Structure formats: C-alpha cells, structure tokens
Length: 405
Image 1 (cartoon, rainbow, N blue to C red):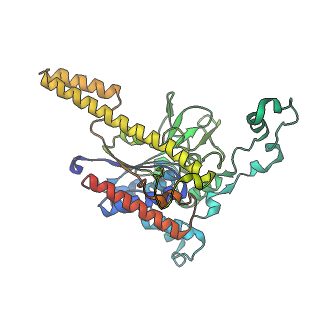
Image 2: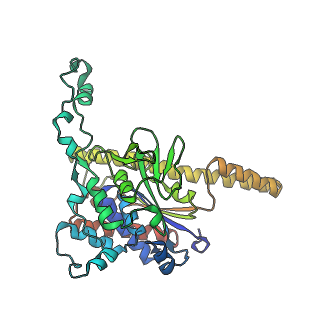
Image 3: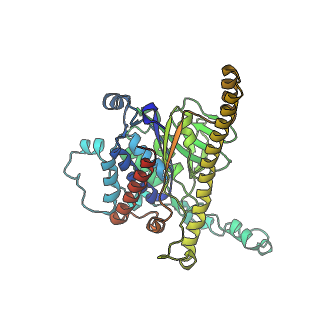
C-alpha cells in the first residue's frame, strides 16, 4: 500500500464502553502524530479549515462507544477537548471554568459524568415489570427455569441511554442533524425486532434489504443513544421513523463488530479501523482465568465471540483478494485478451463485493496486554483512562509502522 495513492481515508471505531472510547482516543493521538488530521464541524468550517488532503479524515463510522468518539470528531472537537471531557467527568476542577460560555460551547466539551452514561431506566422499576403475569397464567414450573425467567422477568434493561442522548444533544451536537455536518458520519445500530443492522446518516431516503437498512430519520444524538444501548445493561432505544412509528434499536455491535464496508461503500480507499476487544492469552504472571470468577470468564467468552467474527471478516477479505489475484495471474499466463480479463475480474469483484482499490488497517490491543483485558469497561478514573489511552497509542504506532506509516 502506498499512502500517496490514497485520496479518501476513513476512520471506523467499534464499541466496548468507556474503555473502548479511551482506546480510540489513544489511536487518534497516534494518527495525529503520524500527520493525520480530523476534519469536523459545519460545511463552512470544513471547507475553510480542511482543504482536500489525503491525510485528513472526512469520513467517520462509529458503533456503540465508537459512535460517541466519531460524533465528537465529526462535530469538530479536537482530541484535547475529547480527553478533557472524559478526564474531568470525575469531578476534578475544570480548566474551562474561566472561559466565556460561547467559547466553551464552540471549543470544549462539557465533562462526561457517570450520570450521562448510566441514566436509570425508570420503567424498569415499575412492579409490573417484575413477575409480570406470573400468577395470571398456568404454573410456570412445568416449563423450567427458562420459562420462569421469560415470563416473570420483564425488565428490558437496568439503565437507559436517554441521559447520553441528552448529553450529546445539549453539548456535542449543537445542530444535531447529519446534514449539518461538513463531513460524512455514519452511526451503526441494530434493529431490535428484525435481524437487520441499521446505518444512520445523511440519507435523503430510507433504503433497506434483508441485511442492512440505511436510515436518515434519526437525529445524531438519537442515533448515538440507539447504537450504545448494549443489552442487558441498557434498554433498547426507540426512534420515530419517517412514518411516525417508533422503532426500537440496540447496540450496533450485535450484527457486525466492524462495519468497515460502510466506509468503503461510500468511496473511502483507506479504512483505518480501531477495536479494543481482544481475548486474554495465558500469562505466567496472571495464570488461568478460571481463578478470577464468573465476570472475567464471561468477558473472555464474549471477547472470543467478537474476535472470531473480526478474524473471520479479515480472513475472508484476504482470501477473496488472494483468489482474485491468482485468477488474474492465470489469465495473464494464458494470454487471455485484456478486454476479457478485465471483464472477468470486474465480475469477480462485484460478486464477492471486493473493492481492490480499498486498503484496510486494523488496530487492536496485544493479546499479551493483560492490564488492558482486566481494565474496567466503564471507569472514568483518570489514571485508568490514561493507561488505556497509552495502550491505544502504542497499539496504533505498532500497527502503523507495519504499514510504513
């Protein structure tokens, strides 16, 4: 890959709580160190401050926690402002208190607190949500424990992302419309009552097939809240579509962990993807995870499922490209006419959804980094966040060096 040949880089950020957000910040710091810039804000601001440049991101794809960081960048906030918002969320004195309100709103983010992340799901506390209909129907013992839980436990989430939606609407997304941005922002969620993922963005019309829906009826803050609704901790988030019907969504990572295709489908030829989830690999100092209890074992199981999906996706990309390259080599060796060779390659690329002009870079933690694995997913402790940011920075620098960047 030659960077000089690239024209439209894109940044794809996955989920994983505050932990993932901090990792992405570290990745962005590394990209910034390598000369990349992050365009964002209104069309006028982007046109004036960010001329066309192969080292400037103008396309962002975010899912769950990644949708928060992507939205901050697309809205024009720099990395320092994003770091400040997270590190000041624990109640430490803010360095922006002496600034004028207008300057604060334009250049700085209000600190993110636990209240902005963990808004109580008030409907969950209603008695009707617990043991709902348990004594109105036939005894549930005949169905076993699973039936007992399904029929008796109707809580749809302990927390709600409504507080996050309010924070984004009031502090980050001042216009709150995808069309108000001078860059491309795509936020990924999953439709609750269908096996389809949804891409929210600046779309004139809503289009869909059995796998993907491209929707333009959500505000940015609504899309972020929907994308971050991780079950069972957060309740599904409802958004009214263009027909006025409320459609429910949950976490954008459910269907696909990395939606790199969204950037490629919209013209990006260099897609840099960051994800913070990587399973633990045995370390003599730590030992076996079976000694650390159910939460850690559950995390490892979840990480393995996610990593398998990512590895399968990456391996498929490489195998398709290797196959097409082999076919191309054979056609050249067989002296097939250039016209027919190119036509056949076009057919193969179309059928396999391969875009030969697009290069992908995947950034993730080292499996030997047990501190990253054990780090809390939702801590706003500045020391913990600082270590995760450093991990993201080091991981990105290590990966970028492999690509001569």
